[in-house]
Length: 171
Image (cartoon, rainbow, N blue to C red; front, side):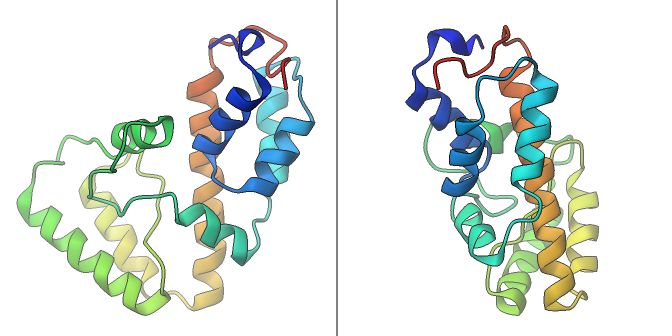
């Protein structure tokens, strides 16, 4: 994506698809243009480190449950569909176990379970879900923030991998 041809709002929309936290979008967009993808990733990571609980809630509101198909056709939904695809995605037993785990997690923590699904099988996701159900609230909140940051950086890398510098020049 060559962002030099995009408007400032299109750049912001792209950022929002990576992490739906308005303060973060403002911080990253306001620092544009970027001379390289690595510079963008560094600023994005710093701006997301750490995310306070209210921003974690804001970001989670835009994420589908693991194992559920995201509604809509925007960039964020396209990312979620790609991230959640795995070789064992059609395993009905695993899907049922993840759905049960999602319910237990939401009951335990009061929010959707979030994990960087890209590169993980459904079996690995289920094992991590079960492990995290045993964490205390504070430790789990730290993990959720870390997972959001990982997802964000993967999405930014995918979105801007072919971008010609400067990135976000129109912002």
